[in-house]
Image 1 (cartoon, helix red, strand yellow):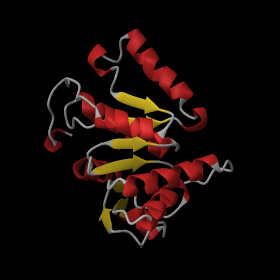
Image 2 (tube, helix red, strand yellow):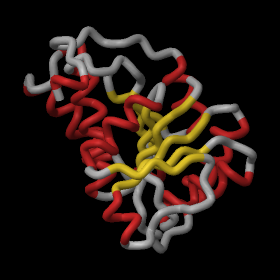
Image 3 (spheres, one colour):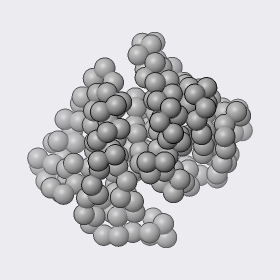
Image 4 (spheres, one colour):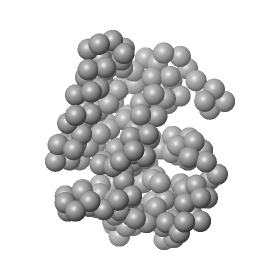
Length: 193
């Protein structure tokens, strides 16, 4: 894995475990020579991931819509900052520039990115690993929901292992490195999206 998209929140929760985790993710990826592709913001967990990766000498590529640049939330010290017009274009660029996806805690935007990465894997747009770092039990209910989707039949058997989950970054990265792509429903291209 040469680059990983990191999905996370732009907020700074009161519990320091979340910022510490973001910093650990950024620093660890940089130390392992894995570039970070993320939402291009300077705030919250997003800024912490980017700053830690940069401090550790890593490559950090931000992808941010013009509207967020206009709101003055873009990180100006990145290796590269790509300004796009739409959120959809942003997510497509994450997929084009990355070899996998790591989701750490975040809110609705983070969930949008995670679900799209999973959906696009099911549809054959990419065959990259989709990881979820379950820090402090943050995603326990989401993990249960994904299992419920499979149990009920809304998630096909070949896709029930699409979401790679671990409570430690080392474990998650090891599992992602060993990822075997699932059989997609179809094989879509960007033009199909």
